Image (cartoon, rainbow over all chains, first blue to last red; front, side, top):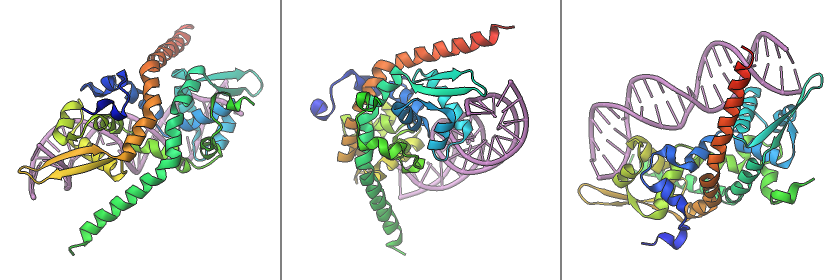
Length: 141
Length: 141
DNA sequence: CTGGATCCCACGCGATACTG
DNA sequence: CAGTATCGCGTGGGATCCAG
């Protein structure tokens, strides 16, 4: 078989393709953490600089304070970011990327690069597909 | 600032961190495609070999035929996989990874590797966090 | 064998109001 | 400022039935 031709022969394929339950696949577990609407965005922002809650809310257009709070809490629980509260009045809280989160960002880099350069191709493929579909539908009126 | 220390100084950061709307971030668009429950799993399987519908259903434990069909259609629409139907009786259909999908898998490789080695650390962080939380709750009964 | 059509529910997420 | 609590809706996704 042409297995090792394109894919590296690493252990990773074994784990996710051996008819295992989805929950046993680490990649799926990871996607459960960062596949949501805001996590990656927040992670990337915190990767650039330690940031306070209110500033995060400003910089992420469209996020509700509920989702910001909730997502930050998840990321903290996962060990990807750390929370730092200063007992001023009112209290000042900032979030910082954790070493594990820093690692994750680095691991996501290629994916991010691919998205930047190739999502336009995906969009093009979608348009072509939709056109073929609608064309096939109206070709015989 | 210590920007370039860990993160590459690529254009990617600009796009996702410039207070842009979430929908403008290619990374989020990509996660909208593959952040679902089954896409990556299917992509990885097809990365190994061209596979028929029924065989995919066998190898992916727990997937419903609705979700398999639906996910395959999405992946095809995105240009990540191709569909090949042979007009036998009954019809035989197989799915194959497309060049774009092959690229994507390669771009995900580091993320997959990270998940394989680091998700245990994430799980550990979660346990520690939960214990601290429950401990803080019951510390003052 | 390869799906499409329907029904249904759980849950992600947004809007709003309240607190220390 | 930095959250928590509550409500409601849209949708992802499973179960089941039907069809070419």
